[in-house]
Amino acid sequence: MVICHILTHQIIFEVTDMPNIASAKKRLRQNIVRRDRNRARRSRVRNLCKKVLKAVAEGNIEQAETCFAEAVRALDKAGAAKLIHRNTASRKKSRLSAMVRKLKQSKSA
Image (cartoon, rainbow, N blue to C red; front, top):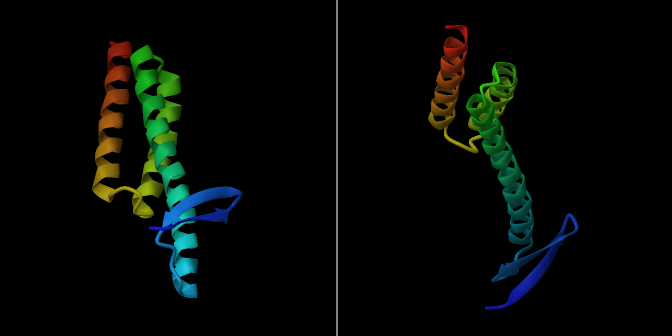
């Protein structure tokens, strides 16, 4: 097993079993870039969902609503891009919506 370093976007990746065929090398480069991009997008979705949960826990309706709108948009995009399953995105939106709705009702009552 040989460890090679591939320089892509100023980041060095360690890859075992470096391909010999040009198209396979390109595919490897593409996979590395896409993996990083997907990780960042998934992380952003998770962070936006956490911001909604934090706002609900603090009882801040305005912040919860604005964060919820951002989270819904990010979840829809992630579902459309197949970063997460569409049903997972829908379930998360539903649960966050229920939390925000419950917060509104508790504050108005």
